[in-house]
Amino acid sequence: MPALNLWKRKNEMKRLLCSILAALTMLLTSGCIRSDRPIEYSRIEPLMHTFVQVKASIPRAVGISRAELGKAVYGAMGEARALEKRFSAFYPGSEANLLNIVRTRKVSTELFGLLTEAGRISRLTDGEFDITVAPVLKAEGFYKHMPERIRDRIPESFDGVGWENVVMLDDGRTVTLRKGAWIDLSGIAKGYIVDRMAGLFKEKGITGVMVNAGGDIYCGAKDDGAPWKIGIRRPGARSVVVALDVKDMAVATSGDYENVVIDRRTGEGISHIIDPSRGEAVRELPSSVTVIAPACARADALATGMMAMGREKAMALADTMEDVSIIVVECAGRRPVVSFSKGAEKYLAGR
Image 1 (cartoon, one colour):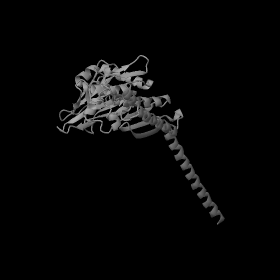
Image 2 (spheres, helix red, strand yellow):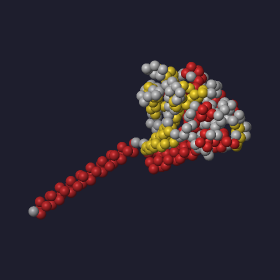
Image 3 (cartoon, helix red, strand yellow):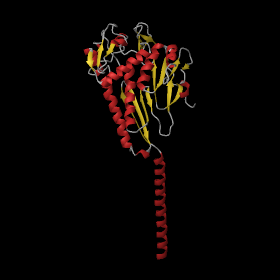
Image 4 (tube, one colour):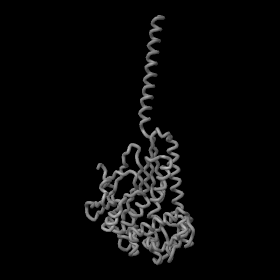
């Protein structure tokens, strides 16, 4: 009996030792697998009248923990909220609205820079991108959800419509709005905020990031060199008609189908895309312009301006710009017609 008990104990010890070794092997093996994968963090929040999504990843060798990566994402979202309150036409106390009310004001260097870029894009698009079209948008019925104390201040007259009515002094701070001009930065501020968010990640050495603010997107460089996959939807539908591979570039899409009000008299859809030269909104025709550029603010503003310009003029302009490519999708018939500016096809997925 003593010998039998000893034999049993030896077998139990062997089984226990094998179990421990197996568990250690699994732990070490899984640890090795995990160590080869980057640390990832993703978050979506409602911001800027849309949803903002951030996807970030970083190699483990960099030494940044997932908690630290998450803190960077939360910090970028906080910066976006603060900038939205500064630039939005829907916040009564925003810096943009303070300028609208007092007409002449020393503004922050940040707002001055944003207005400078808006003026640059206005000149490039022959005035088709215009931050002073608020009276037209109001007349077409677009500001229904704006606080009345701001909406009621927007002029009824179109006299101040025209980017040339935003006068900026050489001191780099002072701005004057002429002829009752009223600015709405919706066509450029979202892209600018995306750029600022991406910049915060770059400062921390986090390059594998993608920021998407309702179609205004910045794609950083993934750690393995692979591009981000971006899809351009069929206007007015969910299906993707063009897939892109993008890295270290921004992508912005403007469509005359995304933000539409219905004309009660005719039942016709009225687009939020404004033609400043005619002082009216573009009537609904499902189409879109996607701009690929180094900065999202530029892509955002160009997409809006090029939608108002129309395909031919937009293509001609894009072909003169070395760092800008555009893709136009038109759906006048059953099948969408896709047009590419010079160099745009290099972004097609799988090429």
